[in-house]
Image 1 (cartoon, rainbow, N blue to C red):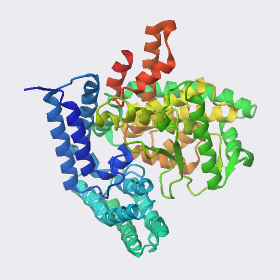
Image 2 (cartoon, rainbow, N blue to C red):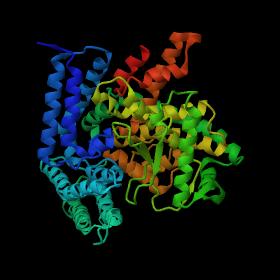
Image 3 (tube, helix red, strand yellow):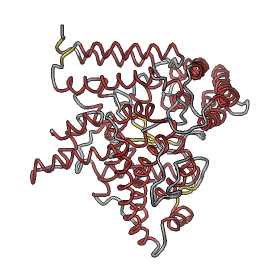
Image 4 (cartoon, one colour):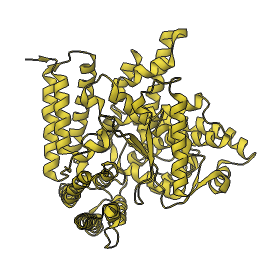
Length: 548
C-alpha cells in the first residue's frame, strides 16, 4: 500500500542516518553535526552500511506518495541521490577514489577547519574526533585495498598526488598540520592525539607509494562505462558525450574571440599569453601578503553582498555574512565553499588556497568570489536552507545544479556591469573559457578524443600534458594550478563538465521564463522562485525551470 505524506519523514530519517554513517560529509556538505564528536567509517563495512541506507531509502520512497510540492521535489532529489550513490558503490568507484580535493583524506582534514574551537568543551570534542582519525584513515586504506583486490584501480599519477598531500599534512615526525592545529589549546593530551593523526597520514602516504602505486593503472582515462556512472551522479542527466564535446568546442571558440577584444584593451596588439604575463607579474596588479589577500577577498565578498541585497536578490539577514578563509598548504589549488551550519548560526565560508605564494594577482579572483560567495554558492546554499523543502533536499547539493548556478552567477555579474576594469573582465572571460575547455578536456581525456583545432597539440590524442597546456591557454592558469586541475578531472570523471553544462541549463530556464512572461518578466522574482526549487539534477531542473 502506498503511504501519503510520508516523504518528509523519510527525508528526516535519511539525514539522521546519513550523519551517523558519514559524520564528515554531513559537516562539510550539509552543516549537520558540527558539535558532534563522531567520525566516518571509510572501511568496506562502512561502505556497505551506506549502500544499505541508500537501498532502504529508495524502497521507502517507492512506497510513498507526495503530499505537497515540497515532497514531490524532495522525493525526486532524494531518489536520485540514493540511486547515484548506490551505483558508485556497487560499481566499485568509491573503492578506487583518490582525489586531492574530495577524497576521504582531504575531507577528514577539512572537518577540523569548521568545528568550534572557542571553549574547553569544544576542544574536548575535537580531541575525541582526533582520536578517531587513525581508524578513519586506516578504513580508507582498507577500502582502497579491497578495490585493488576486486580489480578496481586508480592511477599511479593520482596515487602519487594523494601520497604527496598526505605527507605534507603528516609533517616530518613533528605532528605536521595536526600539531599546528592543536598548538593553541596547550593540552598535552591533544598533542599526543595530533601525533597519532599525523602518523596515520604518513602511513597512508607510504602505503600509497609502496603498495598501491605499483599495482595502479598507468592509463589516465576511465573509459565510457565508468564515465557514464560518474556523469549520471555529477549531472543528474544522461550525457551525450559527442554533443557535449562539440558544444564545448563551440563555446570555447566564442569566448576566445571575446578574450581577444578584452586583451586589446589591456595591451593593444598583444596576445593572451603576453597579457597574462603582464597580469601575473605586474606588482601593481597584485595583493602582497597572505593577510592582505584574505582582507581583500573579504572586501569583495562584502561589497557584492551589500550591492545585490534588495536590488537583484532578497538576501535574508542570516546570509549577509560569508567569511573568507585560507586553508593550509597541501590543499588542492581550487578555491571552494563550505556551507553554513543547518541552523545558520555558523556562517558559510569561502576558502582560497595560496599554494605557498605570498603575492596574489587580482585579475582572476574577482569572478571566483562571485562564483563561490554572492551571488554564487553562499546565496544558493542559504536560500535552499531557508526554503520550504524536505530536509534532505534543503541541506543537499547536486553538482551540476550547484556549479551551474555558480557559473550563472558570474555571467549575471557581467551582465550587471560588476567587472569594472579590463583586467577583471578578462578574468571573467578567462574563467568562462577555462570552464568551457574543461568540458572538452574532461570528455577528451576519459573517452579518448583528439585535441581540437585551436588548442595546443591539435590533432593529437588527449594526454595529461596536452590537458595542462589547454587549461593554461584558455584560462591563463599558472603551471601548478593547471596540473592540480587536471588531477582533479582524472579523479572525478564528468565533474568538470558540470559547470558549463549546468550553466547552460540555468540559462535555458531563464530564457524560457522570459519568453513565456514577455514584458512582465521580473528577474529578481524569477531568481527567488528558481533558488527555492532547491538542488535538482539537470533533467529535473530543466523541467521545473520551464514551468516557473
